[in-house]
Image (cartoon, one colour):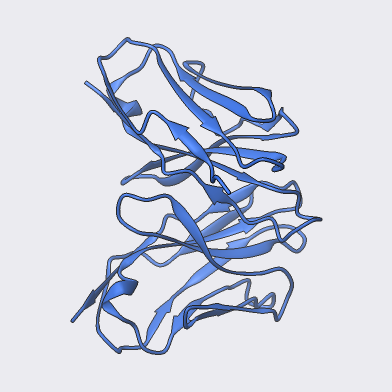
Length: 111
Length: 116
């Protein structure tokens, strides 16, 4: 079945460091791809999205590019802040409208 | 606009008791999803509905779990009887059709269930 695999955490970085969180997917057809963020004690909220190959989603300094050839949607940010500390989830919406999440990657940013 | 509303926010119960979790989706959304989040398994899709009809319940762990959506503005997830391994945060999320938007989910704040 369709699935999402993302890098295990936790990831610990210093403030202003470069961030990459890897995400790959398995799905038939052309799923939509998403990154969600979860702050402590809250539900998930959409961070960015891409609906077709080569699309780049971006928001709050975060970016991810839909790469069909490598079935990947890696999350990047050039300079992280302490306030970016959260759990990040990669997800896909498949042709049956089923939305599947990766297991999440916890990010800690040290001041 | 009101977001997805879940209740209760916290529930502590004893093994064997019935638990009912409730969700009110965003008005106009025609998809509703129930997820369970644990440290060990991450975010698992339990069931989802389209226009109040269950589409895929393959993620429901076993017959002790059931979900209903009697109308467009209300859904329940019931566990009977509950067991300690059911302890988790249960999220409800809703979305509009992908043809209308890109189909992103809007999540409630979750119901934290503890079964003793």
